[in-house]
Every structure is written in C-alpha cells, then in structure tokens.
Amino acid sequence: MERKIDFSKFFPLEKSPLVQCITNEITCESMANALLYIGAKPIMADDPREFSQLFEKTNALLLNLGHLSEQRQESLIDASSYATRVNKPTVVDLVGYGVSDIRNQIGVSLVETHPTVVKGNISELRHFCGLPSQGRGVDSSMWDQGEDHLNELIAALQKIGGLYPATTFLATGQKDIVVNQKQTIVLNNGVDELDRFTGTGDIVGAIIAALLGEGHDPFEAIVSAVSYFNICGEKAKQESFGLADFRQLTLNQLSLLMSETWYEQVEGWEK
Image (cartoon, rainbow, N blue to C red):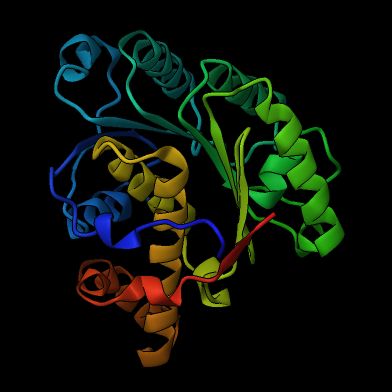
C-alpha cells in the first residue's frame, strides 16, 4: 500500500467514544458488543424525542437502513438532519439499497445530508450509482465483483464524490473499495466465511463510527476498520471449526488483535 497510514494509532481506542446506533434488531446485539470489545460505548437509541439531549453526549452516529418501518424512517431522517445541524460524524449504511423504491428514497435522503461515510456492499453501491447489478436483497452478487465491474464502480463513485466532497464511500465485498474525491484504495484482506454470518457489514459500520468518534480522519478510519475486522476473520478461520465457532472467534478477536502488530498484515493498493 503506497499511502502511509499509521495503523498503530487506531486500536486500542483512547477516548471510549459513545456511538449512537439506529439499526436493525437482527444485528443490534452484535454491533453493541463489537463496540464494547474495541473500547467504545454503544447506545441503541432511535426515539427522536431524545435527540436534542442525546446529541450533546454522543461522539458519532450510525444510521443503518436494515429492517425499515415508518417509525424507523422517521428516526433515520430526523437523526440525519440533527447530525447535520450539530456537525456530528455520521456513517450511513445503505443496507438493501435497490430492493425497493421506498428504501432507495430514504437512502438518497440520508446521503443528501452529506454524511461523513456512506457504506454498502458492492451490489448496493452499484444500485446507488445507477449501475446494473445482480445483487438480491442485502446480499452482494459475485457477478458485480469481477475486475471490470469493480473498476466501473470505482469510476462511478469517484464521479459521485464530486457531488459529495465531504463524504467518503466504502463498498464492501471480496475486495473492499474506499473512495473519496481525492483518493481510492482497494483492500484485499478477509475470508469467504465472513459472508456467512449475519451482521458483518453492520459491525464494520459501527467500528468506523467509533473511529470517527475518536476524531480520526474518515478515509484512514475506514481503511483501518475494514482491515482490522477482516484480519480478525482471517485469524478466526485458522482456529475455528464450523461457522458458529468462526463467528464467535471473529468477534473474540476484536478485543485481542489490537495487542498484536495486526497492521503488518494489511493488504491493499491505491488506484
């Protein structure tokens, strides 16, 4: 990797940032524990009546499109608007973008507030960029991840980055793509098993939000969070037997890997 990032400064966290998560019930517990494992503090609060006081205490915000409802829509939009007014570091996770018109409309509304980070899997972000995709539901398609299609997505995100100069985009998949107006990195850590338990993308979004809450540069925070989590998966695969065991060991590595020189295993290159 040509870009020089001092990965050693990211973990362990020093300020114990408080991260507000508006997310889906399926992965809520995993995300909360993941934040605790890396030294952050989660609060899963989605009632707009609390926002005026809550936003005085939190360090970052995560907005996840999973498991939509009318009430969840209200919470997401209100929180996004509030975060813009108070300049709160925000991660928007476009879970399931492309599935339905209402999900797309909400996603666009959130992105139009110029959040710090917009993430999704490669198929979700292809949909967001107006590119053809074979992704289904919240799952990314392998067809979307061929080299030509990745380069097509990178070009589209670079173009969209001109409309959102304050936002950095993350597209996750077999290779992870980080793009903003100034730079692009393709990351190559991870194992296939990370696609076989639910919530991995949600956890990555939470880790990114925690690093933003610490005050780190958004581009570097994304590269560090994605690489750290993927290397946790690589370590877990070496020691696990079966997918349930793999999941447990991956989550366990979140609190253990930071004591090692994990950053020596980061694989990626600038485009």
